[in-house]
Image 1 (spheres, helix red, strand yellow):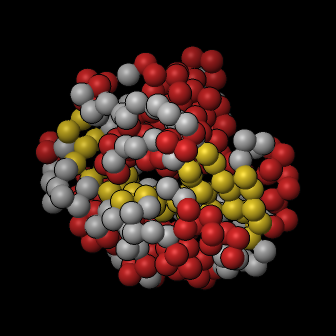
Image 2 (tube, rainbow, N blue to C red; image 1 turned 135 degrees about the vertical axis):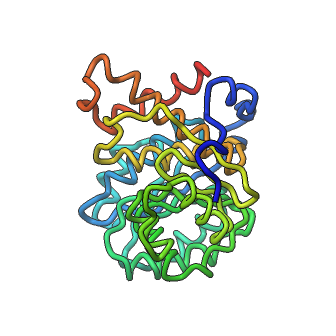
Length: 281
C-alpha cells in the first residue's frame, strides 16, 4: 500500500495542468445526470446531490426519489425531471428507461434500507450501459459490499466515509486511509474518494489537504458526490472528477468560513460556492 508521501497533493497548480473539458455546446453535451435515492424521510439528500451536479456544470438533471416526495422535490428543483420510486427497492419501467439513457448515474444519497438498496442497485446497474459513468454513495456502498459483482461499469467512482469503507473492506480501515483507498480501488476496479484520499485501480493516488472541520456536517457528503457526478457529466474522467470534486468541496467550505465560522455553514450553502470555486482554479 502507498504511504501518504507517495500521494500527489491536490493543488490549484495540479488541477490547472489537469484542466476540465470546456463546457461547450448544448446541455446534452454536458451530460444527463440521474440521481437515484431519497427515501421517504430523506429526499433532501437527492436535492443536494442533484443541484451540486448542476452547479459543477452538468447539462441535464433527473431525480428518482420515494414516490411520496416526488411532487415536493419537483417544485423545490424546477430544473429537474423528477420521478417517483413507487415501491422501495424497485425501479419501474420509467426509471429503467432513464437509467438506459443516462450519461451518469449517482446512486445512494438518502437511501435508508440495505435490502432495498441491494435490490435497487442490482436492477439499476444491470440496466445501465457499461460505458455509463456511475457514482455510488451512502447505502449504495453497503449494497456493493454485499453484491460486488453488480458493478460492471468501466467508469465508476466510490465515495465512502470511514464506516462505509469498513463495510467495503470487511474490516476497519484503521489510520491508513490512503492505503484503504488504494485497496478498495484495486478490489472494486473503481476510483475511490475516501476523506480526501483518492485512488484509482491503475495505481494513481492523490491527497486533498484543504478540508476543515466544517465539512463534517449533515448533507456534505451528498454535495461532494453530486459534484463528482456533475464533473463526469461534463466529460471529466473518474480520477479527474474525484480530485477536482475533493478540492472544490473543501475550498467551498473555506470560502464560507469567514461568514459562518469554521463549523457554522450548511451543506446547501456549499452548493452555491461550487461554481465560483471551480472557476477560480
